[in-house]
Length: 592
Image 1 (tube, rainbow, N blue to C red):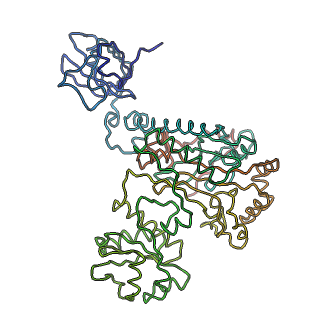
Image 2: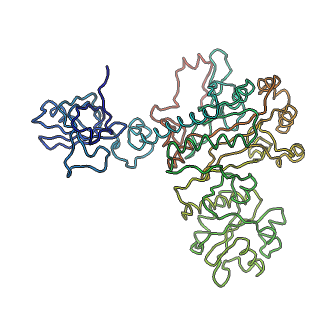
Image 3: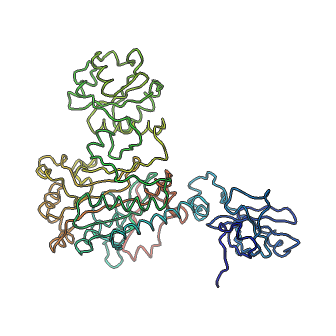
């Protein structure tokens, strides 16, 4: 049937006198005997409905039975409210519908939490009844903002000549840096598909195929531990471009993302373009992390040379063993007391594997601390000059290997930035971090592994270090970082077979293994491969930042909880033995 429908949030004063029909849920109900007032809600907003027992007895009898979240159809005349009855809190507050018909389309049980209020509700309960949670105004607003953002991303990519290509969801397992979700094959016993961690190889093959500019809003899956900004399933803006270098990729993303951001009016202000840039080394030296939050200062300062001969043996011994000493200046940090520094702040440093945390308060008459006596006047003066510490400040210092010092001070900096409210929450800093290391050492095996993926190209001039200093080799990889979170990453790809073989060799992948894992890609490159590069941006994280929420589950319709469970449908769940037999799978009991 064709519905004669007006959306609940749309009528205004100039619609008064019209006969209208509304469909929606009962948001509020007030029974005053002969008059019943209902607020009826749909995704567009709410409208007040007045049902008079004298004027519409049948409608009044029906309305007498309704409760919150019943689904109704109401018909009647829209009238202007009297001046004293105008409700300025809602967009339709100057009008109301005087109904002569009220039809209950669906009854509703009492919800397990208020749907008509933006109250705090336990997240597990919200996820258990996600369909009710999504009915709430805040979630409606956020999911519709996400949909608009995706639409605008597509529009902006099309403006630059990108072609949308869908890539498979059942693929061959390939190393992408996280665990694969595996799907058993019924037709090929003992063999498995993998769900894609990214469309990486397919988008590169699209360049070999001559599409030149590919994009996709790609659904990806990774079996990894969760946190507030991570889900096992996520969506990314995936792009690849032929005949480009980094500048071309940067220019494309600096058009697509800001255009969609502006169209959605995220944070009420446009993004600043071009995005600022930092090399990975600059980020680590200044901020201690490769995902720097640049909304506040408190930079890291190198004190190694100044303190290499100090009388404070912990520092001197660390430097003599090849370590470093660095510090941060906490402006106004004189209010940090000893118990706070030796408690919470030291715990933050130790969580990053630092052995401890040293500190000095800068007073108006000199330096104060249990370790101040071990430093000469010249060393204390140099510490003040290097860190720019003023009276009333506090200097926090860590001595250890360079990676540990960076991690500890970077974590302290981020902790203090949040705890001391050193930045404007409404501000958005989006920047490029470039020239990541090509390789890193695996904490599990101690061997060399790719920091990005094995098809990432190498900075010109660093190829000579491949065999002698692999950990010093810089890649042509780049990330977008937003307010201290990675929002996406990409790289210029290797298309030189000789260089690719050297990368495989550095990773301990011999020719046979390379052929077995990546033969289809390597063969494709033998038929004329253009130079190419690309990027993948996490849509969920971008929408998170745009809406100013800290939880990625607030911008995904049906997310998993922190244990990777979908509690609404109780997934994952056991399957029938018949299904397992079809897949040639037997489940072994877990050993206790």
